[in-house]
Image (cartoon, rainbow, N blue to C red; front, top):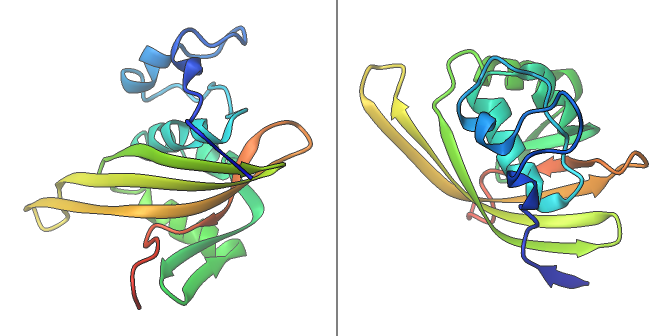
Length: 159
């Protein structure tokens, strides 16, 4: 096992023709042509972009087909139930910012420790702030793309 700082070198211009530059991630929420993460530490910012732009197609590309989403300790969603919950969350998303704290990579598996903050006006019209530390597990596919296998926003919080 090795600890490494996330590789965020893709912040400069992305190399695939027709894809976005890093700076476009924060300015153009209508574009869906974005490079998928080839390093586990890139997942966080691409996920942030997909979530904030309400891009369900990109969100699904970042998740392994067998992915689970932990709702609360001991409770998780899979399959079509997870996909419906993702789509519902993207209907009126409270914007998120995220910061990778640690990436632990072993072969094609990585543990991501990720601090996040959802902040904005909630459905009740009141200012809302939700923050936490997610512990996610990602796997590198045969295509070299890293995808989330276990999405765990509650992290290691107690039940």
